[in-house]
Structure formats: structure tokens, C-alpha cells
Length: 130
Image (cartoon, rainbow, N blue to C red; front, side, top):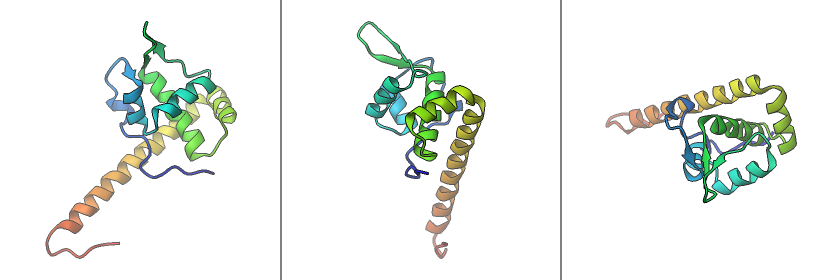
């Protein structure tokens, strides 16, 4: 399976999404993927349909962002092709969502532990730990 760079996504936990709508640049930052990838996925996945205003600007809901996170998990982490990822989401939505959230939480925990280790090693008199 393909693996994503360790810090590629997600940047912001789902619990921290407190707005009703997000622009594509915000979603790209939240997910940790380029806006061009999000636009591409929008054309490939029927489940991703952000709202658009009169000027064509995309507005994503937290539910849209959750779907994008599931796609990112399946494509970037599990190495599925786009068609297979959409099929998984359609037929096994709750399991995919649960797994994607678990990976998200584990990444956040890992980031916190890395920060704590770096802070502990930066204190005077401490020897670096591996």
C-alpha cells in the first residue's frame, strides 16, 4: 500500500471544524493536500459535491470535509485506486469513517509525543533520546 508523508494530513481534527462552510483553500490546509487535488477528486467522486455561489466559488461543509478525509485515507494511506475508494465509501461508509478518524487521532497523538520529546530533549542537562 502507498503511504503518505507523515505530516501530510490531517491538519485539523474534525472536532475543531466549527464553521458551516469552508473555502477550498481552507479545506486544502485542513486536509493537507493541494487545492488542485481536491478539485480533481471533485470531478472523480460523485460523493464530493461542494456548494457553489454565483461566482463559482466552492464552499465545503464539515460533511464534505469528512468525505475528503475518507478519500485521502483510502487513496493515500491504503493505496486504493479512485474507483475502489469510492466503492468502499459507498458500501462501507461507517467503517471507513471510523478507520480514518482513528488514523487521524493516532497522528495527533504522535505529533504531541514528538513535541514533548523534543521539549524534554531541549532542556539543559538532558541527553538526547532516540
